[in-house]
Image 1 (tube, rainbow over the protein chains, first blue to last red):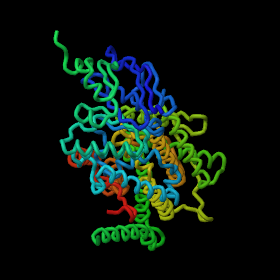
Image 2: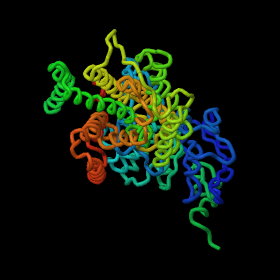
Image 3: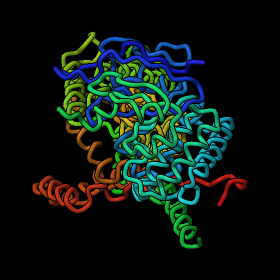
Image 4: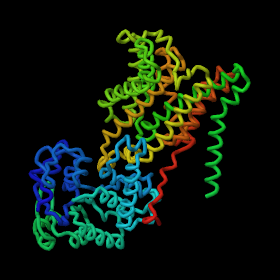
Length: 253
Length: 326
């Protein structure tokens, strides 16, 4: 079953064409790596998928819905969560509250129920706390729940961002450089975390520059250069692809 | 923690004593001029405290620079004044209408500007309060009485009692303040309050993790305005006469100052701010000429040494359910 489908996606910023007629599909249950040299347009693709940026042309379908014109929070509600390339936690709020930010869109208590503290609101709040703690446990940060997000180490902040995204109960999660700034040990643990996310029947798309990591965790790779798709396939195929080697290493004249 | 409990006990004692104050002051009957003056000042502090608490939702929690809160206060006060003097509604029955009118007005003027950030929003909200004041001066719809305002507003009747004396207003105003603090405390500690804080901390991240930022900003604006409208009702019935001069830009600045000075996002801080900003100038009446100078100097020093306010927010406290506690 195709979960996400990009069709002829195009986006320019002024004179710069960041994404040029990109099309690819993501099957449910896959771990897809989006790779390419710096400036290839990978993050723009993520911003287009998550609604942060509007495409000039082309369409995105997610789980049977067109994402055209939807605001980011609606897209999250449909089951598409993200993390940011430059970590965007709420640094002054606790780790727990950061995860509760993700829970927000699955909670239903109205304004009036909150103002008057209805029993239903208190029940929901309790359940959300327990759920948020489970997500913290899942990424291995349960004992840091009280700590300010900004006080966590870089690797922990990346994992907290993943926990926050998971709390939105996504069908698909897009991770923008999840291993960025992590040491070898943390990267190793991240591989395990991604496997466990996959085991929860959550599809994953990730951007990553660490090729060893990408080759090990992804089922399939999408290679971009200058906003266009240059190769698509299993990691071992991509490794041998002359176009990809050329894009990364250049070519002798 | 016994230290925490001790402080909590002292706070409860303080609040209790505060509410006994009018009894103490009125025991020398008839109400002496001195006592009436003190109660008058406290009532003034109370009204501004509730106004500042409602502004705190917008400015403190959602982080929107809104310097036009007096506009919503004015809409509430004029709604009550007009309904009471022209249509003979009782004061209390105008309360919900005053809140609603202020809320609808806020919704209408905020919807097109809610996406503005920081100083840009500040400029537009200053515009709003000026437009409202000028509209009132120009006797809009022939209902507002122009620069003279509206006179002869009734006193509120509560359970058959007519609220007229300062100590009676004290209980009305501070009772409403206490109720507001409880309700706002609950609101702050809900998904609503959290959503506002996520928006304040990082609107892009908030939207990106599923918070409808435009909706929550607008809701914060509206609920703040509704409450300012309620305070308008209390104010109109306490003063019996209202005029555009009471709802000018300076009042908005004072409210803004109370929130920032006291500690935006912290109810206790805002309350302290109200006492300092509204109460201190009364204590130093002797320094009439240099009062504003001292005030300005105090603010400058505050911004340099304690920009987060006197009592910055401490953050929500969560008690984990026993099965997940660690």
